[in-house]
Image (cartoon, rainbow, N blue to C red; front, side):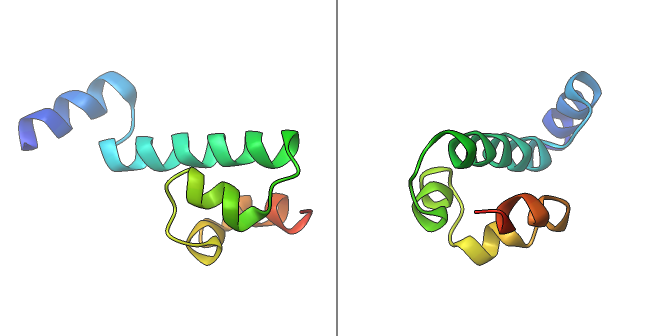
Length: 67
């Protein structure tokens, strides 16, 4: 597993878990800007356990507050 993480980070630039987090955030941001679904529904669909779990990613907090 360690070998995979090192290879992944070398190829992508982020750890596998960080990469997945960023992809989930990107998907949620896109849905927030393109649909009328609630924040809790969108973040659930994107793999977060709750809206507060999503809001922990502070640098995206301002974007979420607009919705």
